[in-house]
Length: 332
Ligand code: ATP
Ligand code: MG
Image: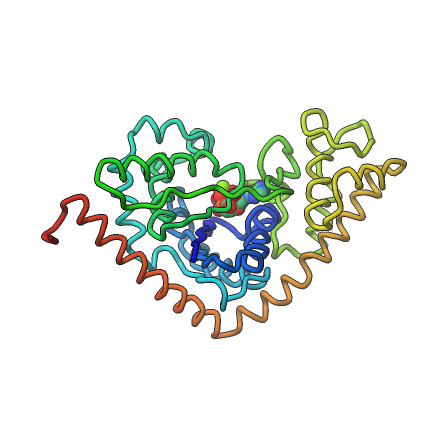
């Protein structure tokens, strides 16, 4: 049996970008990859690399777990758990810090981007984030790691660290493969389409939340930044705004970009945006209905307990092996 691992930080509520780039892919994979066991976690330890409001963080953790299931993740097929409830993530994170070089961390573009957004001191863990991410993956001997472009560099580093550790201390970790979803790998901000849509962004108009009021979500599509050419044509460089909306349309409808161009060749932005707004509404409505039902259901906690126990068993064994390889403690 192969293993797939992936996580999402509870730094905000989930966006349409997270849905298209991550959640929806997981749902597809759980049905397609029958020989693969899935470990999906809420990466709350990663969230505290930047300041968080405690009450909000607590709320996000549970809310995101419910959203995963509301988006179609089957708790019987997938091990869903919360990262901080398994101490071995932090333990192996430290070992990975002791495997990586400072220069490697400093080269990560996500660190360079995110550090500029900090108004208070930059936390050390923002720099060492990829070590914890490597740990998340290597603990479970993941064969497959589905990621968006934004995580490419981190996954490359994970592979480097796994190979380095194996070479220094003997075969311990599986070197994981990245898995890139085909369409909609990266959804852009609705207000600054050169940038990625991010749940931790400051401007709420830049993203659509899966839990946004349906009318609010539609309005965000209607007011999304485009250009003055008024032709529905896919050109990421010259027309990033409309291209992004086309990507969203294609991802949610399974109509190809080419067919969208054809279908709207005599149309205008207003019509296209209106159709997209409707499509977004139809996507969010059933997710929200399932979400609200789940938040009242005690089975959510049971799912998270079961996921934790299954994951913990594997993590514990791996960690014992790692300490032994390193010569730590008294284990023979
Ligand atoms: P943050 O602002 O805290 O970084 P985020 O929205 O970027 O939040 P992450 O927790 O960093 O979300 O990423 C969760 C998952 O969602 C990852 O698999 C990532 O590749 C994917 N993802 C994030 N943003 C997008 C996006 N705009 N388009 C497609 N996939 C995305
Ligand atoms: Mg991110």
